[in-house]
Length: 274
Image 1 (cartoon, rainbow, N blue to C red):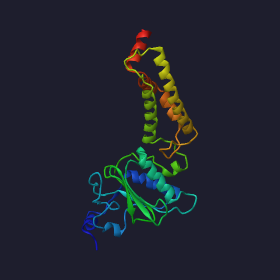
Image 2: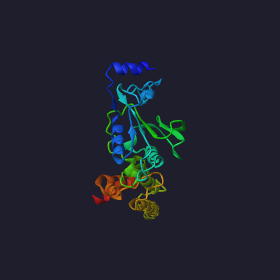
Image 3: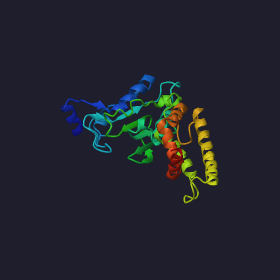
Image 4: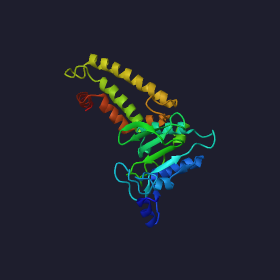
């Protein structure tokens, strides 16, 4: 039986659009050879309440989904072994979302089978991550947030390239991990006795040794990144040149100086130069 929502959509001309982040991902995956569905079949269109495969979803988040917009796609198993399995592809998408990669920040939830295509998990971020079981098996279901229907945030997202090591963009979490390590190292290298003379030779030498040890740790991690080995918290190789360029930039150097030296020490140094 045709639902009232479905009947209304038919009367209004059956127009629909797919949320832009999903258009970008759908088209990219289709280019690789995956079959990807968007607008739901009659079963979806007549379901009560209507969900994200319909242009009149009543399950939008964080707000009401704009009328006429479909906010879900289904990715089917690859046609051959040259493409990543749904487990590998889903794992990449899940890992990127957990790592706060900007290009997949549009993802509201996903149903997928981490182990096989016969069982499934429901992973949602509304806003925090919660995992539960799902009966939506045999494919990867992706639903987008209601507020990204025309967003460009996912235009460049390519989970297949990331799986193959062809996309070295750092996630915001990876950047934060590096920044926090740098700032943590510099802060730990601060003066043990903040009331002492910041130019005291013994104190300066002691703290330079501490800072040197922290920098050794940073250099080791940067070396791993340069070799294409991601830090433990992420899933993709990182372009070391991008990291080095940022650290060598005027802004990067200013931030490092500001973090390295207490204000009183920096002021004393500046006074000596004048």
